[in-house]
Length: 413
Image 1 (cartoon, rainbow, N blue to C red):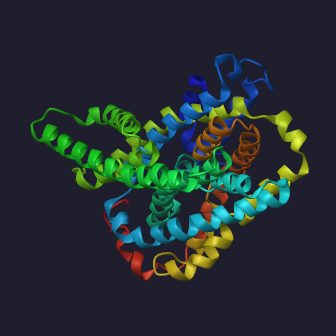
Image 2: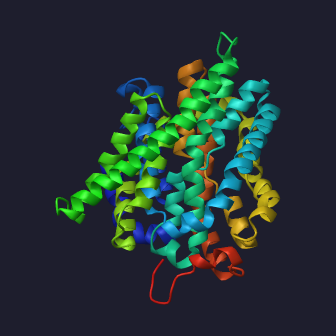
């Protein structure tokens, strides 16, 4: 895995403009080294695969979400919170129902099993999305409203998906009596409301602490890399300790920290967060490549292939088309088309599929979800650069409510 990270880092400038993204290369490296390739690595020999996937994806999400939250510009939060709220409320609901309906139709799943599968596939993955909206190539070809809008949505809906996932799990797991009240308490109140509060408190306290340390010259810029990782892990542990959903807590902690800390050089800070993302997230894609169940995919046959194609085409684009009149002041048609296509399925789906396996002990959810994750990483990774160039050639007019996000003549956004 270390070799993969080094090679990708050395070739990052070329990769960002090529037909393959960094996650694509990392997944392919895992496949080549895994049991279906050269048989150099076998995840089963390291322990229980589901446990490894759940804990590794949980850690990766924490670091990745923190990087996303710290990278988003303050002006983007102020300008885009309304369209992002629309995408979170109505967009997530639409993606959940469409994915669930397709799973029920093609795989013959029961209502609650289909709703669980749809919930696993609902969140837009911030880790995969980051590979599309960061770096010099993205800055040169995509407007800030698209880059930060996708990052904001992906970061927030990863945590909110927890309550969508837990409802069908509780309805499937015996005893079903009291499942609704348990969901309200554990998933909605503790998982969302309490987790949001914990994240905001931790983020604000961390920002004040860093300000104090900088004011008294107790910290240097070179410490920010370690501070980011330590902050991610501390928030992850603190949320787990108080029984809150760690995914929501980490993202909100990073966002509140971002909004309350003293910014220095945003461009240098983005490069720091990109380095963190490469170091801690690319190994997860190698692990994914090692864990892909090709034999089970073959057994599931054409319904799985049809599900992958239809989910990629229908899960997000029709939803964005329906919601565009509600966000047209912030996003133009090319923006909506780009965001309608690029809603990748990735690390968050790995985490929720592993969570479902832990609760239900049914391998089907991982077998199906892994196929959709693989398809999304490949298809979105390969189409990222060409469609980014296409958007740059046909950017459309600047939406009136997003003009504040246009870079100044002497400023690189």
